Amino acid sequence: MAKLTKQDVAEVLRSMNAYYQPTAGKCVATPRQMQLLVKRLQKYTKEVQSSRVAHPVFSDETRWALDMAAWQQRLDRYVREIEQVPSAERDTKAGCIAIYRTVTAPLLDGIYYEDLPGINFNKQELERMVSGEGHPGVDVATWFEGEQGNFRDHPPGHSNPKPPDVVTPFSLGNQLIEYRDHQAERLRLFWTDLKKSARELAESAKSLFRRGEENAGWIGLGLVGAAVLVGGGYLWYSARQNKKGKDTRALDRAVQQPRRLPRGAR
Image (cartoon, rainbow, N blue to C red; front, side, top):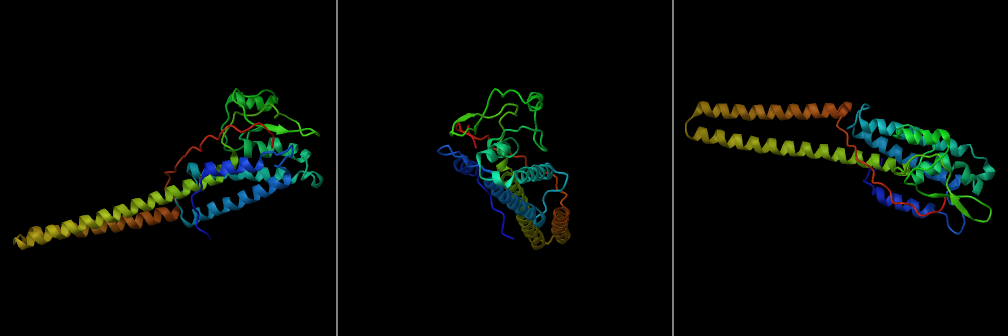
């Protein structure tokens, strides 16, 4: 298994915008292209999950685990929606339009036309989704329609702009790496401090012995032994906690709000 590495979420989003923007009246985000995208997102999500298993720092009850479970549900839905498009429309404008509300809009534009797991919506957003009418005060993107390559505003009845869902697995992967590295650094510093304290206690004990204070010297050695036992106990406890995945302090890093997209459909 390749080691999970930190990803530049902003760069991922810029790359997606640059590639999937329509050019010369041509829709790029076809069902076939989007199917390729979601397959790669599935692959990266599996890599993140595998890294979590190899380095168990999040239990099933943490915010991170709940966000991962919700993301996988959304990703499965994107896959199903694309699979429903007839093969004859996989590379057509009609195919682009067919998956815009359910796949392209949430993944690339960060707007939702339905209540999906793990996404927080306010009352006004949910009302627009039900009615299919209206745009929020701050809106994004346009969609592609028309035989002559003309553009028009995307359909109404959607949520406020949110971070495009395409960055979610990369954000989850970054959180996992940051927390794992943070825990490793804490353990390293603990062991460094413990060894330093043990050396200082040993030097103090030697000094007491040299002054003939034998009883005090034995007390000093006893403190050294106690420090080593405490340190060993801590390391044993940390290993068991990591193995069981009981550490519940997750990082809730907000994904940076994407830039406003240029007008033009997917």
